[in-house]
Length: 71
Image (spheres, one colour):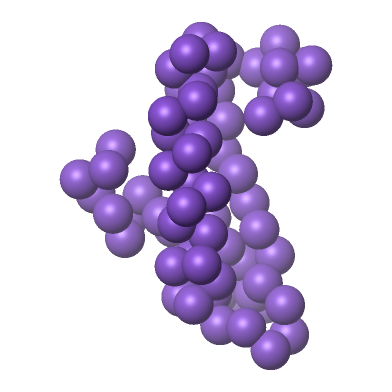
């Protein structure tokens, strides 16, 4: 969030690269608390949080698609 504010961003999509031993689905679930904290903090800072994506090789998982009701 600090980097987004430093760049005067008005919207945000976060991306995490999953480690070699971690599947994207598991990493996405592990990142849930972080995403919820960003969703709460973003409006207070006039930033729109669009999604959190986990990448591993050619596979990806989106928090927005996983948790439709949170958005």
